[in-house]
Each structure stands twice: as structure tokens, then as C-alpha cells.
Length: 254
Image 1: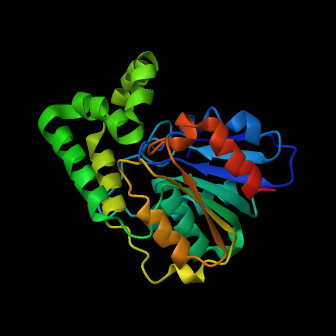
Image 2 (image 1 turned 45 degrees about the horizontal axis):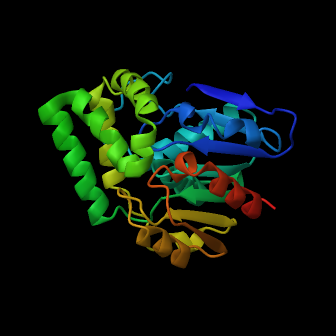
């Protein structure tokens, strides 16, 4: 599995886990700041980016958490502060249940306890685009699910460049579809009371993909959790509203 380590001279480690795309590049803008305070481990999830490999049938979020556990061993990391976006947050929740001694804290960005019917509908639309119109149309639609309309309008050139990279990254549609299936089947209902580490939950009120009520449910289910609302920013609010996101980081890790 491909990984990078930044800020290696710090005693505490943060691990960054991305959403569906799985790429470590999702965190590029955040890594320099985190690396001034933490040893930062970032990785490409299996079957994405530089972590080549074909994903088999029945692949699950539990498998993804086991891969992270193996990554911690490879990087000689005994315990992490886990930051996860969407699917990355699901991986963090699963890891905190399966290996609680490995997780010092969780910071979850637009994540959920059980995949919501609205989110399933969004993924159904995206899968239909993939099957009927191909990767190019899937990638063109991607920003609509991630970013607010005004942000898309203001960053058209950047998104065009990203689309070319994503088209190559999503070329293996079987891996992508099996990762989506893993998300659709995710359900930790009735288990989250067993999470004992400090947990921060970040919800964007204008997230098109994941209703903010999913974060409210997480907050109710996890002991010792704190809910942060961002009024604007869409699904990828840490990218679209970096200053507000950094203020949340400062509060949570203070």
C-alpha cells in the first residue's frame, strides 16, 4: 500500500483517510500545517492511486480498516489521531471498534453510522452514469456531489485539471463499483456506544451527498463526541472552507 510520512519528528501521529476517491492527494492542502504539530501518515487506499490491486467480491469497510491496521504496523505507529472524510470516516469508526487501542481520537468529516437512503440514491445515480455514460460523465458529475455551486463556478480551471486525473484513477470501474458497494452496505447501528476515544464530528449543512442529520445521529450514538456544524462548504468542506476547518482542528486538538 502506498503511503507517505510527513513531520516525522513529532511524537503524536495523525492518519488521514480519504473518501471514495481514496487518494492521498485529497489532503495536500492540509498536510503542511498538520506536519508542524504531528507526524502525519497519509495513504492511497487499496485499489486506488498508487496502491495497485484488484478488489475482490465482498470487499467491505472492515477490510479497509484491516488494511489501515496493517499500515500502522508497517509505519511502526502504535496509536493515531484518525481524521477521515466520508468513507475515510467510516474506516476510522470501524478501526476504533476493531482495534480501540490503536485510535487516540477520531475526527469525522461528513460521515455516518449507517448509509442513508438519500446517499444511496446519490450513489445509484452515479453508478447509472458510470454504466450508461462511462467514466468521463461520472467524473464530470463528481463536483456536483462534492462542492457548492458557487465554489464550482469559481474553480472551473482547477476542476477541469482534476477531472483529467480522476478519469485515469477511475479507469478500473470494477474497483470503483466494489468500493461503492462497500459504502452502501456499511451499517454500525447499535455498535457506536462502544467507541471510547474522543470524537469530533464535522457536518456541512449544505452537503448534497450526506444529510447533516447523519452527523447528528453519530453525535447521539458516540459517547464523548462533539459536533461541529459548518454552514457552507458542501461535502468536501475541508477543501472549500479551509480557514473554518482549521479553526475546528485547533479547537479539537487543543
